[in-house]
Image 1 (cartoon, one colour):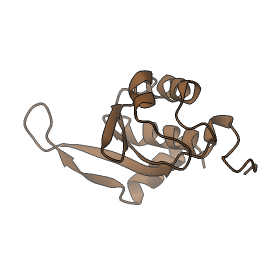
Image 2: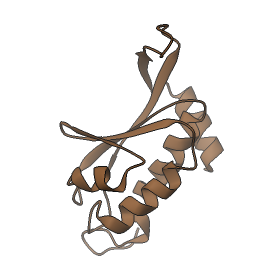
Image 3: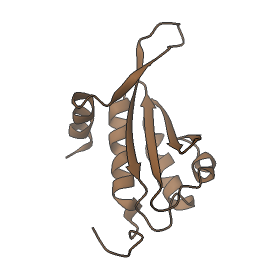
Image 4: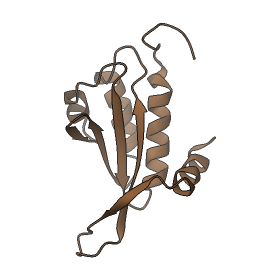
Length: 125
């Protein structure tokens, strides 16, 4: 499934979590989110964070990543590394903006693909 198909699937599956106040005070903006597990053996270290940020910056939407009680700007390498997300950590990618579904789909694909690294158990999937 390509990023655009995935984006349509996210919208159709009802993954919108709710409305957030817009800067104009209305309730028009919504958030698209997906929960995933970090699969690569080294977790969210410098190289995966850099790849994630490079991809996130292609989108106009605001992007955040949550892990437990911490939240980071999805366009900040340092912020992502400070999450301390090791292999097996559950994270939530959130996006709000014009291309939110496409952004979440592309970033989720990176996580699911383990950033091209081996999974923790060393098996290929």
